[in-house]
Length: 326
Image 1 (cartoon, rainbow, N blue to C red):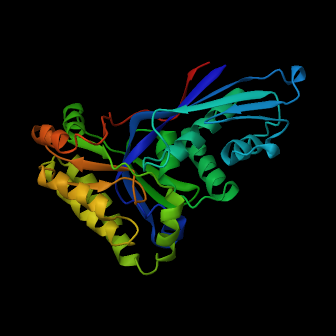
Image 2: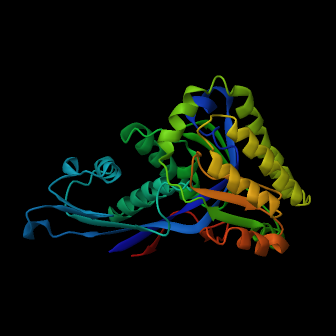
Image 3: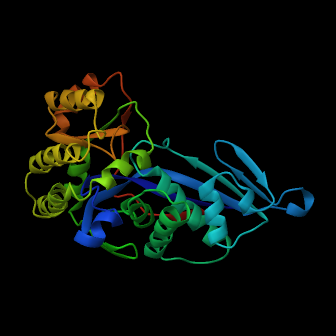
């Protein structure tokens, strides 16, 4: 048996420019970090000659099938077919966090699964190639309306500025900060669950139809990636990062009326009134986790403000996809 894992991510700037519908014409980029919450896949040989099925997969349900084409779970099905595994395998998936919460958990699962399948076959795959494969599977085989940052962050890990040129031409630059600065930055992060789950594809579909109308706003959001990078790497006061996040959230809200709603706006306003410099809804919008960026001194006030919400504690700069047991 082997166990793979891949991290989810939090994205600070540039979300929305990581879709080929935009970046193939204008170029895109994000500033994001992998966090210490993972999707796990176990893979082990299955003695199919003793059963009347040859593949067993387990997630929120169990599927027993003779070949991948019979499988209901589309990502398991397409990844098995993509890797040429037709029988004699048992797979299980568990995760630290639920799906549909804006942290890229679906892509973390795809990356973790592909990592496990390659390792099961005795194959080594480079992290960047693993990301490219996950992008291909999700966009062209599963046919999900997804961007390209989640797969990259799950495969590569770390804290990165990621530039998108083509689906298979992505440039990754690591954010380099002194350990003390990195720790200080991490201490400013406060994440609250809005209580709303949603499928990113449902939110994104409307946004993609408005790429032309939103071209200038997306260009502005792309420019914020470089500004965020400059703040972090030039040792500017971190309050500037929080204030830039506020600008990014206001820009993101303007992309489509479905990105926010009264409940989400209320949560954001409460966080600002409690002392946060800025923040944003993580993921495509309409629900999931809200990120606030605030000095540690006001975190107790934020905790009191959101005592009826789930608060997520995270470590940033987490490692990318890897085999943790074999």
